[in-house]
Image (cartoon, rainbow, N blue to C red; front, top):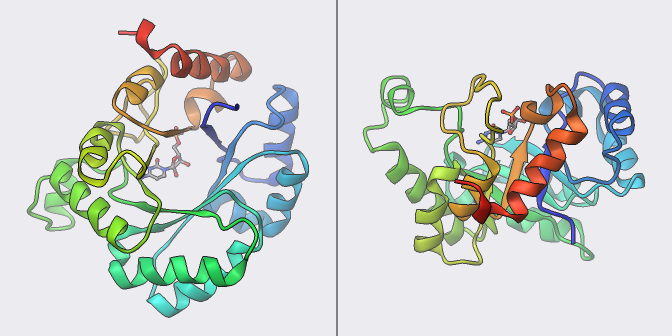
Amino acid sequence: MQAPIYLALDFPTGEEALQFLARHELTGVPVKVGMELFYREGVSIIHQLKENDHPIFLDLKLHDIPNTVKSAMRNLAVLGADIVNVHALGGLKMIEAAKEGLSQGTSSKIPKLIAVTMLTSMDEHTVQSDLKQPMELAAYALHLAELSQKAGADGVVCSPHEAASIKAACGADFLTVTPGIRLAGSAKNDQHRIATPADARKMQADYLVIGRSVTAAADPKQAYERVIEEWKNYDNYN
Ligand code: C5P
């Protein structure tokens, strides 16, 4: 079975993304398509990636009124992505509507619905000063995870540091998808709450999302393999 390590295809064009995958022999690995690529290429990039057998996490982070999200999810469901997502901050009704839209859109393989708790680029200070959210970040992320579960989501996107408490509250089957992954020695960039692949697994992440630690590495294939090695043999890493 493939390791659940989704490579974030944050490239300006589909051509660059596909060339990168081919050049570094990463054809067929699980990939995450986000706003940058999807807004440029639309559904054609999803079709091309599927033709090359990539499992797909379509990371569009929907956040709108429930009816609009339901209709959008109905359309996204037919694309054949394995995972789609919404912002948990859209609230209970919106997440329920997303789930309903997905099951209306396809009867074959319904994509997993994942809700984003707090972006991993957010730190305590930003949440309190910009968003005026008085709760502690970890407690607030946990609250959003419980809300998402109540609304029928299959799991959440969260910081690796929040995964264990979310599992404890929501159960082992509730999925934790964690960005903010950095190989030792990689630049932190704009992420704040980061972890290595081995640490993320120890902290009970189910799926990893990793971008620049691989795409900006001198040898991306070797970097991706290192992520898999750490994921599989996490006990060997401190
Ligand atoms: O390059 P890096 O590994 O930081 O990329 C992380 C990817 O995960 C980006 O595509 C980003 O949009 C996405 N993401 C995130 N934090 C979330 C949800 C998604 O960083 N909470």
